[in-house]
Image (cartoon, rainbow, N blue to C red):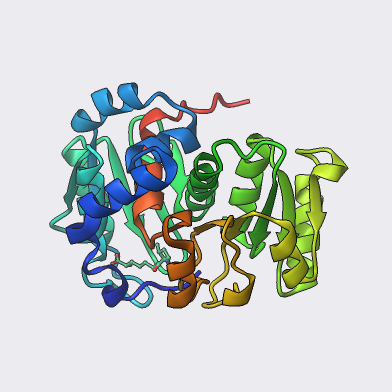
Length: 284
Ligand code: PYL
């Protein structure tokens, strides 16, 4: 997982309205709408409940420490998406204690390894990597106006790519897996075989062939410029949760409104929708 820099996120809050309108144009849904599609929940219900759902965003000082603007940006995204969010005025353990004492409904916090949302009432947890893969797959499904029976390429078979592949299978896409190392693709294909018939998930080791075969792509690698400009076709649609973006600025110019990429917005919004709506799993 690439560690964000303050420069990656410092202008997100200012661009939320514009980004929301761009998503509406590309996918037909807004940030909250795409998040609801990813969580398979009704948007009206979420918009009714979110204003009274209090989320404390807690800065975490462990490891490499606080990223300037991280907590403030997460809270801005949550407020823009209709949630009652605030940055805790304490951090780490004291922040968690304060959330319970204030009877907040949820906390969101990130150390160097994990970024999670936790519903304090029903104990449900949303993990940023899993939710990000799922919400970008939902954006691709909307961009494609239904990705059912289409070939969708997943570049990068890590936690985000895995979650995207699982979501694409739930949308009945045919999933093509690519990784620059063969092992992660094989491990992921094996774990997906329990979810889908053999012929619905295949591995492609030749990226150029994969890009020529697949019109829709999830770019979930931590590498920039993984998709060569010469292979970007006029009909291609790309949802790119990978940081840094795997498409060059020239490639973005070719894609125009057929590219969805951000560094926090969709994942944070979908995490909040998930912990607001996810039912507590009954203990077996
Ligand atoms: C959650 C982001 C998405 C991509 N990379 C992940 C990352 O940068 N993780 C580290 C987050 C550290 C936050 C710091 C703070 O300000 O509370 N502990």
